[in-house]
Amino acid sequence: MPREYQRNKNNPYLLPHNLYMRVLYIIRDYDRLKDEYHAVLQSSPAPRITTGYDKDGKHVSELMQGSGGIADPTADKAMRLVVISEELHAVEQSLRMIPGEYRQGVKHNVMYGAWYPTDASERTYRRWKQRFVFNVAKTLKLVNVVHSGKEKP
Picture 1 (cartoon, rainbow, N blue to C red):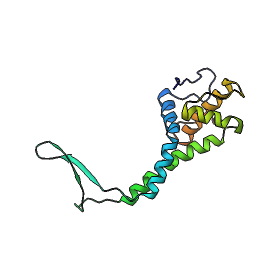
Picture 2 (picture 1 turned 45 degrees about the horizontal axis):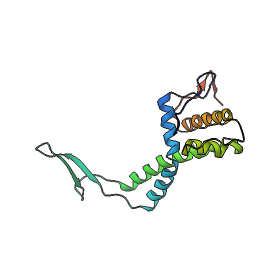
Picture 3 (picture 1 turned 45 degrees about the vertical axis):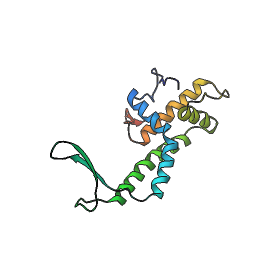
Picture 4 (picture 1 turned 60 degrees about the horizontal axis):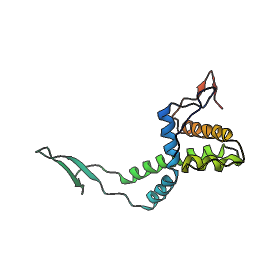
């Protein structure tokens, strides 16, 4: 994949580098997250496994079978579904903010590393890509969007 750059001058959508990369990987993980969401919906709760150390300091791992711990596999499953659905929703909502003629080009570039189509300039696609990544971060509440009393576009 090519290196990921953000335009630094006059860019209201500039993110710190580590946050930018984090959001890019959330977006690139979209297909796997969709599969995982459906798999979690169809699955039964996983057995609880405890890990720790025995009296000699050796690492041990045991399957818990009613050993007194309080387990709520349904709540664990629900929390996992919420986290996954928030990320999926953020990507989908941010994609809808991109004009239709640029949407596929930006999506395929970010998710799969494809070249931009030649129907518009590369600069146009890069701007929409930057807005897309910024909007995903904003939707996930990873960035503070207040700027001089007004929200950034």
